[in-house]
Amino acid sequence: MFDWLVIGGGIHGCTISTYLLKHGKVQNEKLCIIDPHSEPMARWKRNTDRISMQYLRSPFVHHIDVHPFSLQQFGKISDQHNQFYRMHKRPSLQLFNDHSDQVISDTHLKKSWYQGIVTKVQKGKRGWEATTENGELIQSKNVVIAISVNEQLVIPDWARELALHSPQRVHHIFDDTLENLMVMKPPIAIIGGGITAAHLAIKMSTEYPGEVTLIKRHPFRVHDFDSDPGWLGLKRQGPYRKVKDYRIRREQIKEARLKGSVPTDVLHKVKGLEAKKKLRVVDGEVTSYTMDQEYLTLRVSSKAYQVRHVFLATGFLPTRPGNWVEKLIEEENLHCANCGYPIVNKDLEWCPHLYVMGPLAELEIGPIARDISGARQAAERIVASL
Ligand SMILES: Cc1cc2nc3c(=O)[nH]c(=O)nc-3n(C[C@H](O)[C@H](O)[C@H](O)COP(=O)(O)OP(=O)(O)OC[C@H]3O[C@@H](n4cnc5c(N)ncnc54)[C@H](O)[C@@H]3O)c2cc1C
Image: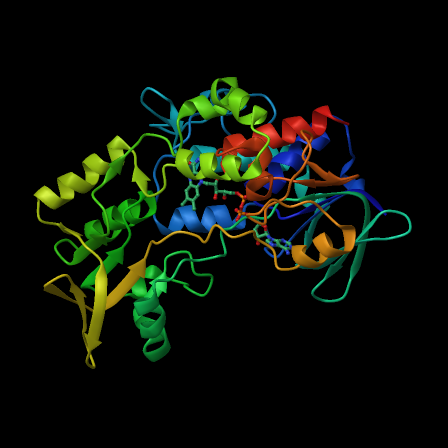
């Protein structure tokens, strides 16, 4: 019997685990972090590496450790150059990952790591029981569900149809089955207008100058952060907490999340590549395609673009993650809002000893819930309640 079971070992799962361990709320032997990957934060590292993101969008105080200045201190003893980007001191991805690895090593997080996928959680006689896809049973007094929407890929209809006929020619950039981007040969089209598409366009057009087209539905939306920084604190969270109607909270989240936006520095890089004709940027939506043995012709309004491969940088579906959560809701009679997301108390407890983080905590934490800052605030609330 564990004291704590954390389902999902991404940024969120690692943050709550670090907080629990460092605050002395659990020992490694009594903590189990279950995740399908062999290493902590594997999906984060893979996704950010795929698009060769150089700097995080969030500032230096957002990381997986307890002390807000931990990453900054770590930067002082690291010999890396260009560790932080300008005014908001956004850490380089390298520094952020090295710091995370250090925290994971300091807390011996891997001693608590269990590779597997949870398919069911139910209440047992002595606490919670989680069943894995291999039929193992893990028992724990407390459970934190720290899963994300990051495996719910948005695929446009035309791309889904194309993938049926020719699966090698189109991939969502965060598809688990995509092993090596560089096997995709130019000319290449990238679909999407947000930060992921922009990073990918920079990467691919540097590799294949003049042979990459970025196709986006809307003009660039320029915002340095993915929501107004007021949402980090009481300025916006205060009034949000007073809203009792969860439909209004959901509307506020939708409005506040600056979806499909890019920060200024990333936009400047894209514009620079466009000016040098290394990258073509097209506003419009793919309406149809034709293909022959070698090429794929994408129709965008009255124009046609001939490419060999397509990358989708079209984001994630916002529906509630975790199919298995449905059964748990039914069996434990857990409260959900109209949007299907959990209604939890201020300690992020859905029912006694069952906690949520990340998107599942969105209706309580607000628009920052999925981000690193949301992971920190969730961990702070859970630990403070113990
Ligand atoms: C390219 C990119 C850049 C980003 N940059 C920033 C940034 O600069 N700043 C910021 O604040 N945010 C950023 N974000 C947003 C957010 O911080 C990341 O998406 C982050 O990875 C979310 O962490 P997570 O732990 O919720 O999700 P994930 O990294 O997806 O981890 C969830 C884990 O749970 C596991 N899991 C799921 N279901 C189960 C199950 N049933 N049993 C066991 N394990 C399960 C998954 O396999 C996964 O390993 C970025 C996101 C992306 C995609």
